[in-house]
Amino acid sequence: MPFHVGGHKPRTVERAVFGLKQRLGLVAWGAVFLALGVLRFSDGVLFIVNWQAMPIYSGAVIATGAVLIVLAMIPLSWLEIVARWLNPDRRR
Image (tube, rainbow, N blue to C red; front, side, top):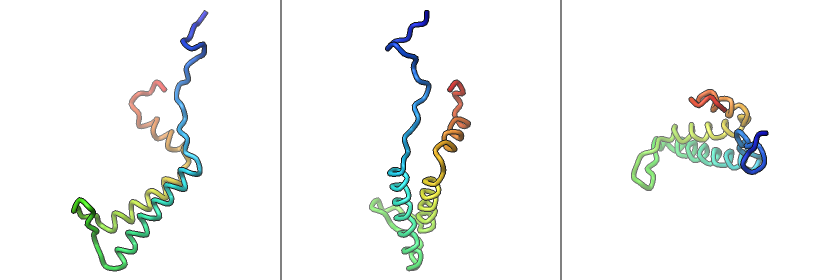
Protein backbone atom coordinates (compact mmCIF):
# COMPACT_ATOMS: atom_id res chain seq x y z
CA MET A 1 0.00 0.00 0.00
CA PRO A 2 1.74 3.20 -1.16
CA PHE A 3 1.94 6.09 1.23
CA HIS A 4 2.67 9.68 0.27
CA VAL A 5 3.52 12.45 2.67
CA GLY A 6 0.56 14.78 2.83
CA GLY A 7 -1.92 12.10 1.82
CA HIS A 8 -1.72 12.66 -1.95
CA LYS A 9 0.64 12.15 -4.83
CA PRO A 10 2.97 15.07 -5.42
CA ARG A 11 2.51 17.01 -8.63
CA THR A 12 5.29 16.86 -11.16
CA VAL A 13 5.48 20.46 -12.37
CA GLU A 14 3.23 23.41 -11.67
CA ARG A 15 2.32 25.43 -14.74
CA ALA A 16 3.26 29.07 -14.82
CA VAL A 17 0.43 31.57 -14.97
CA PHE A 18 0.87 34.00 -17.83
CA GLY A 19 -2.53 35.51 -18.43
CA LEU A 20 -3.84 38.48 -20.32
CA LYS A 21 -2.70 40.97 -17.66
CA GLN A 22 0.93 39.82 -17.88
CA ARG A 23 0.82 39.73 -21.68
CA LEU A 24 -0.56 43.27 -21.89
CA GLY A 25 2.14 44.46 -19.51
CA LEU A 26 4.80 42.87 -21.69
CA VAL A 27 3.29 44.47 -24.81
CA ALA A 28 3.18 47.85 -23.02
CA TRP A 29 6.87 47.66 -22.08
CA GLY A 30 7.69 46.57 -25.62
CA ALA A 31 5.76 49.52 -27.02
CA VAL A 32 7.60 51.92 -24.69
CA PHE A 33 10.98 50.56 -25.77
CA LEU A 34 9.96 50.60 -29.43
CA ALA A 35 8.62 54.16 -29.27
CA LEU A 36 11.66 55.45 -27.37
CA GLY A 37 14.03 53.85 -29.84
CA VAL A 38 12.15 55.08 -32.91
CA LEU A 39 11.82 58.62 -31.52
CA ARG A 40 15.50 58.83 -30.70
CA PHE A 41 16.51 57.25 -34.00
CA SER A 42 14.28 59.59 -36.03
CA ASP A 43 15.92 62.59 -34.31
CA GLY A 44 19.31 61.33 -35.46
CA VAL A 45 20.45 60.11 -32.05
CA LEU A 46 22.31 56.85 -32.64
CA PHE A 47 22.85 56.04 -28.97
CA ILE A 48 21.35 57.03 -25.65
CA VAL A 49 23.46 57.45 -22.52
CA ASN A 50 21.76 55.85 -19.52
CA TRP A 51 22.05 56.83 -15.85
CA GLN A 52 25.24 54.75 -15.48
CA ALA A 53 26.89 56.65 -18.37
CA MET A 54 26.76 53.58 -20.62
CA PRO A 55 25.76 53.95 -24.29
CA ILE A 56 22.61 52.18 -25.44
CA TYR A 57 22.16 52.09 -29.19
CA SER A 58 18.78 53.13 -30.57
CA GLY A 59 18.66 50.10 -32.84
CA ALA A 60 19.09 47.82 -29.83
CA VAL A 61 16.25 49.58 -28.01
CA ILE A 62 14.01 49.12 -31.08
CA ALA A 63 14.97 45.44 -31.32
CA THR A 64 14.33 44.91 -27.60
CA GLY A 65 10.85 46.39 -27.92
CA ALA A 66 10.08 44.20 -30.93
CA VAL A 67 11.28 41.07 -29.12
CA LEU A 68 9.11 41.86 -26.08
CA ILE A 69 6.03 42.32 -28.26
CA VAL A 70 6.70 39.08 -30.16
CA LEU A 71 7.26 37.17 -26.89
CA ALA A 72 3.89 38.36 -25.64
CA MET A 73 2.21 36.82 -28.70
CA ILE A 74 3.85 33.38 -28.42
CA PRO A 75 1.68 30.79 -26.62
CA LEU A 76 3.08 29.64 -23.28
CA SER A 77 2.85 25.98 -24.34
CA TRP A 78 5.40 26.62 -27.10
CA LEU A 79 7.79 28.18 -24.59
CA GLU A 80 7.34 25.19 -22.27
CA ILE A 81 8.20 22.81 -25.12
CA VAL A 82 11.39 24.74 -25.87
CA ALA A 83 12.28 24.91 -22.16
CA ARG A 84 11.82 21.15 -21.80
CA TRP A 85 13.96 20.61 -24.91
CA LEU A 86 16.74 22.84 -23.57
CA ASN A 87 16.59 21.45 -20.02
CA PRO A 88 19.27 18.79 -19.46
CA ASP A 89 17.14 17.14 -16.73
CA ARG A 90 14.80 15.00 -18.87
CA ARG A 91 13.00 13.27 -15.96
CA ARG A 92 10.10 15.74 -16.03
